[in-house]
Image (cartoon, rainbow, N blue to C red):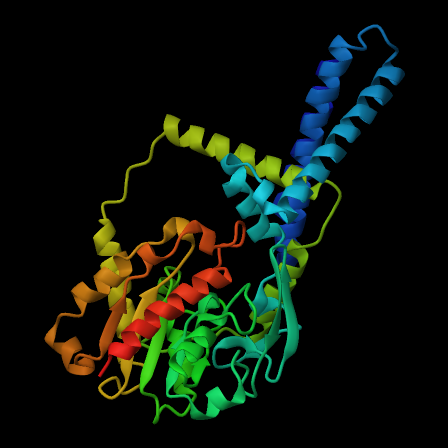
Length: 412
């Protein structure tokens, strides 16, 4: 009877919280990610409470008074939750202790509820009407997450390079957070390592989450008359920006300042802590993963008819389209293109697709023999990546620099 009563109370509370979860995003969109997760965690807390304490009271304190059974089982439940919260937080801050079977769930938690995002960190980045955001000029800052803490130093243009590279470099590296050097020291980025290998200035204009369209828009803002070599680092999520560029008449559409402010607020809210956040959020993610897979087994969806090679060909065509409308003279400037992403998704399929779709008279007339493709997948191992973050450690950055140096030294 006690168990049934607790279950009914839990169901009523969970239903009420579900209604609130549907209302809050309309009231405060930037805070929605925090409150939806908070309410979801409270729902799970109530559900666990009903099952855990109900079971204890039904078997251990069946003959005890209702009050004593309620208090004793409640205390044990709170101790149980506190223990697993401490264990979960420990594993997040020491990722090598995470069981391999739960690594995907911990990564999801870190990326959505824990990670500091550089482009929305107001101490490092700011809104820019041309490319949505950029790092602050002449910055002397620190960027930290659970696996690293690094200085971020920028020049007068807001790039993570020195003033000499900004003024005299004939080699420019464009890309997203991998080129920026997310998670590594100022001197450990592949553009800086490449500069040391070549003995000449290399400018790093990489910025977190930029797609090809914004990368080349950034290069176009510079004086490219003396640009001899442009290194473009591609990543699979570039396709969204490149597609939007093509659908907008080959123009870069930039959101307004309020959208950026809202994104900053969303990140701030998502990182706020509340008691039990780590354990309950992870439990919610694990249960969602399990039941999601079970649902797919019971009701399998039809697979997409678009072949894997066709999707990569589309990405390659959108990439080349951005290059052709960049305003950069690629008959005079050499290009090296490579693709990098999280280790679990690392492959050379995009590079192979660029090779396939670029063998047309129109593209050949625009680029000649100035496009050089660098397959990188076989050069990196999982040890070159952080455990949770998905970005490269210094060892991975050095490997990329060496591969680029080998190509550059063989160019005419």
